[in-house]
Image (cartoon, rainbow, N blue to C red; front, side):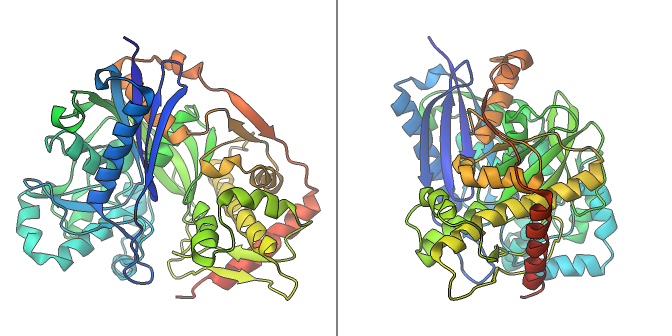
Length: 494
């Protein structure tokens, strides 16, 4: 009976399930979008029950599409939107409130209080992160403060916290497993990435009981098995990683200096930095890439909060496009950007600026500005933000990037990929399988279950196209200079 690996890819705007065969090729895909909830400006929420139900629906859809039995799935890998915070009752399985999404800015005041208490240096040294509303720690504090009746239960471990991977595992295993992996734990702002333990000082500073935090395990290995009442079989869950670390693994960036960029709702560039955590001086995050067989490997990360979400806004917010597919032709329909720059700081700016008060800005509008100029400016903004991250990465790591491996939904846009190569002045390499996030989760599960070896995984990766830079250096510097001027206009607005 032929066996497969199933990856659950729980993202910010949709849940997906992807079935891979023994050669790492996609057999079937199921995808379902779910609601984005915006209660107030700067607030972003999801319904945890919708997350779970949409993920389960896609899981069943894939099994049906592939015409297989659940028993043919050798293992499940989970990858997830990171930092998004869910707090729920261990006994009933019911969430206390909506999930607070990684993009949410409501805890900016809590972050400012931590900075005023002089915790910046300690947070960076211990967790590799900066103090920002992006991470889970301040979100947990906010939930506990808004729902004071649950604190006693949190202190006894009856009310528990998890990122989305933990929430999915809890439900998949019939409420038996409350765990996460090293990569997701490292995104909470509560985890010591050097000793690999929840940090008592930070938990105390945020008044978070350690009893409510999940057990942290290796990214590849058995976490538990699915409950037969969920999908009709006991399938081992053998791989877990946050989406960006999973993409790094799926792109086979397994040695120091290799880097990938994922183009999704946000944009996330990670460079593998080896077995030592490299401290950033340029606004990058130091994060755990993964832990396998208790061996921890690290990465430097640059986070762009809004990338594909800017295109989504053009479609849903402004209604000037019907589909993201239109954007390539529109961008190519004009010779240049018309000096229009779009800084999509809808939820602040990430690396290297870390400005929680920045807001979205469009500059350079004239009567001659058209829909095509706005679309082109939105696409170019993704490449410019990536260039800002790479500049910081090269300052920190001291390793010149030879090529950038890319993945995510937007890499099918040839205009964006060529512009990215031009503005970075390095080749951009697009693999044949661009679902690197799901593939990384599948690879971790395949390794953890013995389905694949490292050598077998290495043989799977194939190049689809390499975009070579062909922009003159003076034009590149002119465009980047104008972009930096636009960014300054967006800062400190809120």
